[in-house]
Image (tube, rainbow, N blue to C red):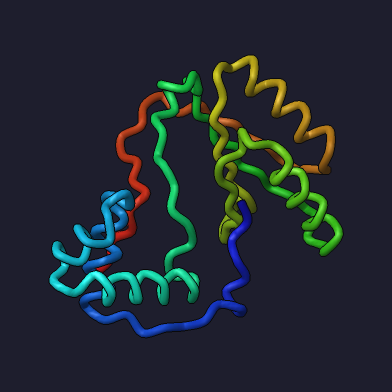
Length: 163
């Protein structure tokens, strides 16, 4: 999923109550509005209004279920570091189309520094990664590509450090 255009977001000011709600929702978004309201110390209507406001403004992008990748057979995580000598708009559009095409690509970042792009891939096997890798390099012109297999996940958080 591509990130929304930050210039089209509505900026809202978050207060301490909003932050308490966001912290709890990041831990468990399945809580009922009544339980959430009691936990943060506001009425159910006030909590609902705050959640709606933060959703409409884009602070809350979506609510999802976090799944253990190994439990669903996605045993391998690879990172692909890409350097390119192409920076024209048409190449960027083509590259974006390619990375959006496959659900195995779970993250993609454009970077500052020596590496231009970093892609995270979740697959069942090294063979499956190799097949995907071949498809990517066949569809887009890349200058230098390096792949790395994650040997161990030492930390993986979806919750942001809201203060």
